Length: 126
Image (cartoon, rainbow, N blue to C red; front, side, top):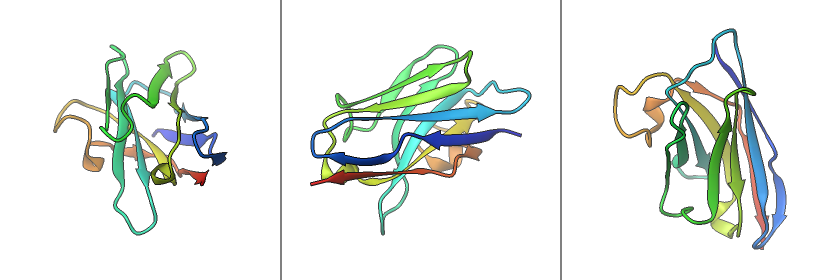
């Protein structure tokens, strides 16, 4: 059983930066990939970024490409999301998720991830 705990959210000025962390715990943690998703009020949860755990290969949503960077520290079992040049539309609850296998699609859909954190709020103050 994997427990994911996000941290690092908060209030940030327009154009500011935040770094989110997601720490995993559990006796064995070896996901195929880790992802970040977000959900704004009244909207569906959407893909933000994902990283393959072994290779480090990354993928981003077009809306955050060039502004957000996902990374991981395998030894610490932690994945990060560095967010720069934040915009009002980035305001949302951010969730990290673990994907156990490559079965399925490209890793951009919520159903491909089996373990989720509780979320952390990011609010851009325009």
